Image 1: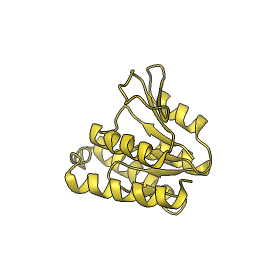
Image 2: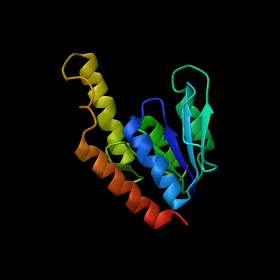
Image 3: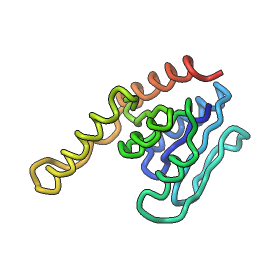
Length: 149
């Protein structure tokens, strides 16, 4: 298994948690972004820099992901694509994207997007807080305990 990170919008605190988990659990970690990233020197951690453009990083992750991999992303359309390939998604707030919930989350995301475009709903999510980071860490640990070899 490999952990993939939709790194352009991933909070730095979450990346730090992932760096430590990859080292501790000896799981390969790949960050995909439109710009070069600094990562700790490790044979387990690498980056892929893709061209600029809408969804270029998402498309690359969806192309490369394998069944059993974990993808860290807040992008629900990407989560839908990777779940269809047999992977699992995890957002930076600790919610798993699975076959059981991703279609409903995608419908809700699309509805909220329509409401926001009509000025009927407020903007995006609140900043990542300590409780979110703890939930992410706990969910990541549960996933890795179950699936990392």
